[in-house]
Length: 323
Ligand SMILES: [Fe+2]
Image 1 (cartoon, helix red, strand yellow):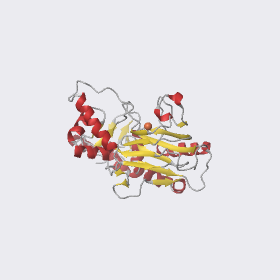
Image 2 (tube, rainbow, N blue to C red; image 1 turned 90 degrees about the vertical axis):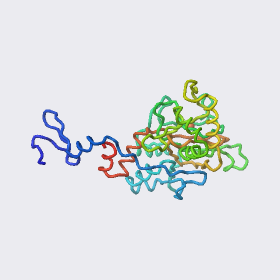
Image 3 (tube, rainbow, N blue to C red; image 1 turned 45 degrees about the vertical axis):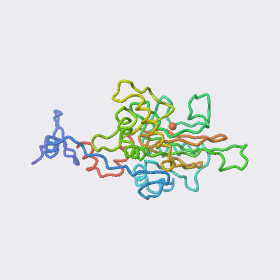
Image 4 (cartoon, helix red, strand yellow; image 1 turned 30 degrees about the vertical axis):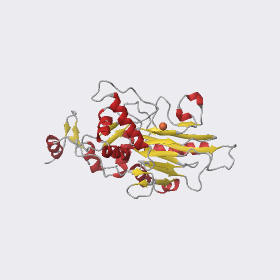
């Protein structure tokens, strides 16, 4: 069908508007939307990881260096966002060890994905242990596996930690005894174990919002929230009793603390660890001395948008977004 000369058409999509603000759509778009408004599910990002790394056998954790980023930024950001279930950025051999310059480098890398999210904690953070903050994150205690911002209706999508420095002048034999290893647990892998070993517990935690959220289109896991130190009230008027809920929670906790699901990594100064806070739980071992850490959150929508736009052709992205 020929195009109306009074209409301005987008050269790639075929949509158009005229001077009276009437909108025009290609016939194939209208035909498709009349038949179905179901969008395609996102490609699966569900290759699990455990204590030995990725279950796919791929090298773990996926990582890029500052050199990769400088060499081919577009390709590196595509790799970074595609692998971000748990992801490591490592400095190259010439990196600047001064904390102030590392902070700039960390912010620069995060902003390659999207802007850093502001919350009531602030935006980009940079901290050392400080009991005045009245939050376990600011102590040097061990922290069990948990997700952050469980109490938000839109929990942080990505979480990043960048180790700036860690020293303890009182340590006898220096490096290696300071502690502070980082813990990552693939919550989707743990949920798959729960579903297999105790389907009733899985049902309880997925029906009583908001611990385990299942995607109703694919049946796969969509998001989880879990923090033993930050729990809300378990409702008494739900389909299950509080006793049943706590039994399910005990089973879930026992899976999260199994050795074969815990992935431990020792960050070195200059390392930046990024992970999906809707899926991956994090924690740490106790440490001595003074550890300076910086990092921030990125919104889920902005991360997914960046991932789509760097990994898929435009037509495929439109199919997923518009339908
Ligand atoms: Fe945390």
